[in-house]
Length: 174
Image 1 (cartoon, rainbow, N blue to C red):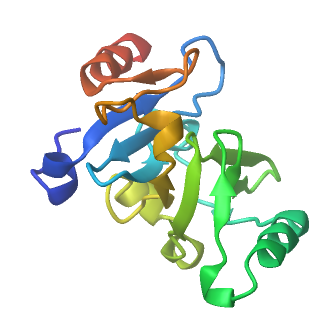
Image 2: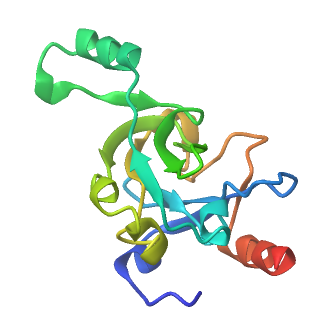
């Protein structure tokens, strides 16, 4: 897929999360802006693209316990924040066969925005995954991911790759 030169393409570092050994491709992208904002979405190698599904829904679950925890910590409604870890499910894709595909946040940070447009129009996820079909925006926790020189560091053992490595991966799975 050839990308037009957009703001995201010019100003964000591109990282890709994929698991080479897994049967199901739960591949995601992570775009990092210099101000520690991260945009998360699905790559065209994700299983939802391969299945060419037409009938699916998208939801953004907030567990009641999470909601209660962050309401108690912050008395004012405008200060409510949802802190996420790499294991936090920020989105679920529900297929017509009742199977649910979780989408994880991939990083430590504060969830700033979930793309609510996906609830009304889930096909944005497939039609424009790298711009209008993004899943969410997270403010990165600097102490977890940035070194002393402000270079982006991922936790050891995570499967994040550069754009070049991702292109090689795409060639190998076809």
